[in-house]
Length: 418
Image (cartoon, rainbow, N blue to C red; front, side, top):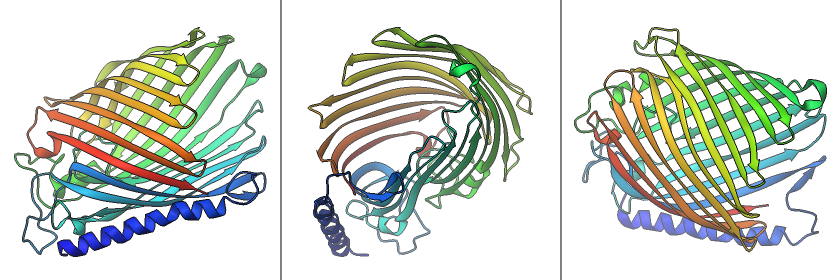
């Protein structure tokens, strides 16, 4: 596809997006009883999001002059993208039965303005969340939830950039609240699957392992069955003892990675230290009873500070132990800082940063730094304009561009909700 054709397509999509605020204004001119369509006691909302984004390391594309879309460069390249996200949100509140459904389709268009030939990798992503709750205030309740997502943000810590993930998890929880709710215990059961697909056909320079070879990325496909138990006892009005234990059986559809049988549990305190400071402190242990046969201390320490009625600050550290293909297990030591403020009832300023030290079973060690900052302004209750900058820096003891990179992203997004 030629450069003029790409520019013409970009202008057409921009014009289409520009027409949506006018549509939102016309449908909002009716009675002031809230937007959306009334469904029983709830409402059905239609949403549309248009986003322009620059990503400096978005994927692997055909080299200049190549007509074969299966032949791609082995270096990460930058590109200007457009995300077109039509969606919906359904809210049906109720004390006996409540339902929340939200989701969107996301067409990711690679414009070819920076890297010619990238348009062939344009693709469809999406997300859907369903939550059905029964008897939310009763001594015995039930919650059924499902989360579906197709994205280039995978859940596998071992895989780098240039990979698409298809993930789905269904979860059943049964909250038990004897004695008025001061004590609550929740058995849980979940089943998840994730499949991976590489966006390129060549492995990155200097890396031939399964974590960056497109022909081997399906070795990370997995199914995960989780059984867990969460408990909370409020021994003070705003302070509780918390405990969480869960067992994961992780199996892999391809390759020779043995199944993981991982048991981990934590316990500690959560609540208000002062009217403005909330603290969570838990500690525990994780142990694999499979072939990896390794264990580690688990912990979380998090403090939240209410700077004002509209501004919050959160600081924390967490250590986790998780299964992963090709390596067996990895430990994640993560520090994070988040801040958010609402100014004038319309302008939201937010910022988040984190640093992860990933220690894989064996000799591989990765570091991952993330920064996410940006404003968001609500012009009308049906239209929000947001912008942001994201920085991701990853380095590994193993070679390869897919797991050693600096990624800069900037975006502008308009969201319309009816």
